[in-house]
Image 1 (cartoon, rainbow, N blue to C red):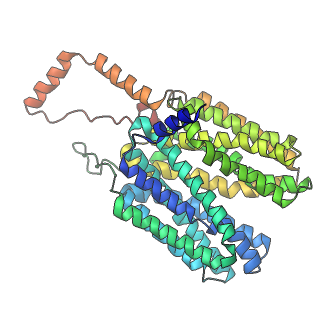
Image 2: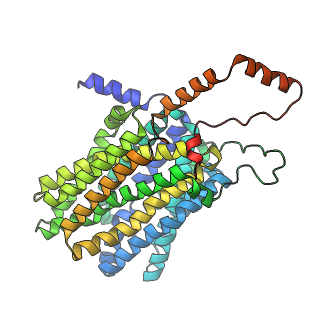
Image 3: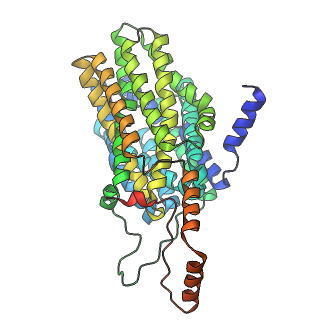
Length: 455
């Protein structure tokens, strides 16, 4: 592929998206560029404050536990308050927690701050995802999520390099920089990002309650979406395990810690370098096919770790499951937006985010127990089996709900609707409206297909 063709491909990938999306993209990039807390938290707790490795692991797990509560909370606030107020509030809360870590030194004080930070950081994600779904046309939603994910990883790569180079300034200084970056993110949202929450639907005749009342229980009763969440939980477990199991496996084979650093860096390098190309290849593909292929890549990539014995071989396995990650994350977010009614996008994204948070809490514990017990080979065989199970689930259980590419489905629905309604019927409806019959049929949002409302 020539340089010109690559340039044209990149231009096509980033063109045609509304300005509001790009301000959100910029806020994500700024936020992640200053994300130093989680990267250096364990080193700060052990090297600076003198706590044990066990306590450092507990504190990091508390961050994930906070996310389990924060994700549904953020989803509810996104639909009730609005996208913009939720983003601003949670960014400010996360900035306050990052600043507090620079001054709080007691063990349980640090644990409490990290727990609250996990709540705030995870609570902002449903509002970001809902804003993307509100702002971007249906046919471009997956591309927009891919670009936002690219910004997240690009910012994280910059933060890792800059943080390592600036560590001589002290961990507390890095935490304050994190707070400033998160505060700047809130300022960008406040100044440049408009509210995008859809207008609330009108009440049906005789209905005393709000028409847009959707509880978390209602979301979980949505059959296709519930299946999507459970399958995503399986994939998230497979995706999270290498971050704990891979260094344990490599050190168990006698490889130095520096080898793990170089191997895991491949993940960020591949995403930053090839996310736009992956976007082009996967454009207009069926989400069911993409999610199935991504699960297979996770299964093969993590399963092959049991066969690796050198840094190069371990790096090759990372490349495989990283490609799965680049395909899965934006496709899953777009599928969530597609199944969610417009007025409940926050809650749907909140429940989906909770599956990521649960995996982030469970997988480290599970990986440690399995490696210390049956051994790393059993761990990687388990991730291989779970990945295959997820792939089968996507292919067999979500074919009807997510069968085609979004733009193909929308076009097909419009064609069917146009062919199914005779001109005489349209004229009859117009006559009734002209006669004063105000009971028109409620329009169906393309983002909430009929198959998504099943129990």
